[in-house]
Image (cartoon, rainbow, N blue to C red; front, side):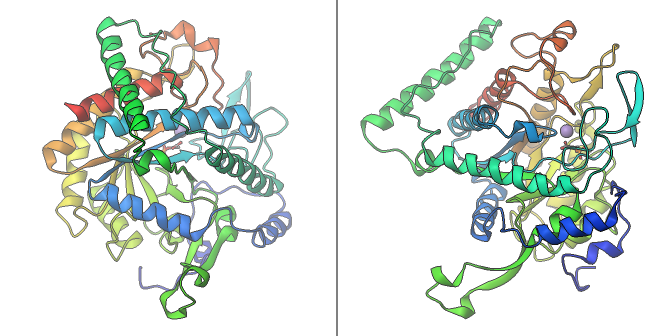
Length: 458
Ligand code: PEP
Ligand code: MN
């Protein structure tokens, strides 16, 4: 398969899952044409910089933190929502740097996470069966907006651009400035032992930062903050027109030595895109599209992934064994990880891909449940358990768990049960605002960072 000719449109001749039936195909063609002349959202040099960081993660020299909404909405493109997510990711990464003693690579599920795979074409909404919400890039959440509308693809581009612009502006303007005291907000932690543990970590971080300040020697990691963007590369009608044959590094930065530059196809919709659990069939369209792009890419791996498929996927997507090119995002569920992860680790680590992939734990997607009253939620304890098990198993198997993939928001939502606030079923309705999967709120997310830091610092 890898030797077959590839271009950004070869996926069109393959079977495809989760692909929408557009009611107006001519309108779709028009939008795709317009998208193909819009400027790239990200630059190939940034994509290559991320790939180099991920190579370090694959080699055990850095840790990857990836997080954001399950379904990003166009409405989240506003100052407060963007800032709170950036701040949370930065604060979590400071905790992780402290705990792991490694550089932390940050990727937001932001500025493009608008397309959602769905298990069923319809769903119940306020007592009515209507077409499923497939993410703002295809249809709207409210009744009357569920028809697929191709003009939303162009809107998605503009909302991504505005979000990315504000991420870049905030970071350039010092949102990550650690001169300002960080608010650790530990007041909610009820368990005195945990509270003590978190306070010790927070105080130690604060002291270290003050010390670095005094001696005016801040490591690069705290001086230049990078935040990369990512989304599930589900809607290939959107990814294809943003995939461009580009040179990198550009001739201007390479003393105009043409022979030093290399042309490759970059998907410029984001730095990193991943293949979801429902669309990773080897001979299908998504794998075909992903095998041709130069970006680092993720693949969700779950209970339905045979080990043999995993190796075939790696051989198709990364035939040259480039370290850091592929992130395996494992998501089994707390009850299944113990049985399934070791097999997957052995399949990969006993092959030519040893020390080549980034192993990342997504402790969210195997742990979704519904309350008796039908609310979709997750237990903080299950999330933590899958993560803790994954850390333990990797250690046991001699591989490196290089990152976490989380659904989180910087707001005080009440979507996941438990955590130090002790959220219970009756609390879920207080501020449940997700239109898709339940996210960790800012306290639960930070708590998870403390727990990972604690694991590594033992
Ligand atoms: C997701 O990441 O939101 C998602 C749908 O995950 P998965 O493909 O693993 O089910
Ligand atoms: Mn999700």
